[in-house]
Length: 179
Image 1 (cartoon, one colour):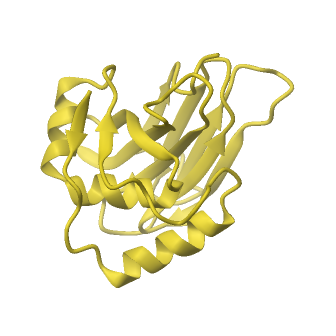
Image 2 (cartoon, helix red, strand yellow; image 1 turned 90 degrees about the vertical axis):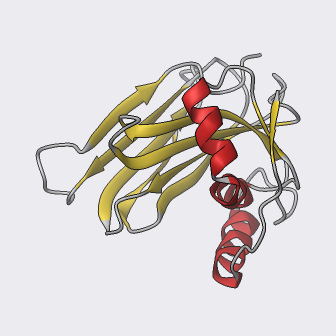
């Protein structure tokens, strides 16, 4: 596992947003993220490099998820690594152990408001997916899912809710902790 250095100089605004969001989250123990965020062994080399080069974004997204989310299990620059309009973050807790919850945030990197949808699902038919959608200038989510089923995360982005063309349309498999 890699480690991302502790972020320095987090703004008061970001901290206040993180406090407000994580206080409302169903799986968070506190509003503070772990001091050091680990990068899971399954994260691709390009995402590792991005995370290590941008520790402030890694820390900010982890803060949104909450204190128990200390390991990045997915960090995708979307729609491609060279044309990044958004970054899809998935975090697990306790080193992404199989009995830990999963959290996801979809970062808007366009500089303007876009319609976004973030959906995190396990593979159990009896469990509803966690969804956040709307027009966002910063990020969609966070959304949380209990462990199980090696689930999926879906990230969608359009210029507006009525647009027929997606800027981002990505589904990633096996992102929730498998038990």
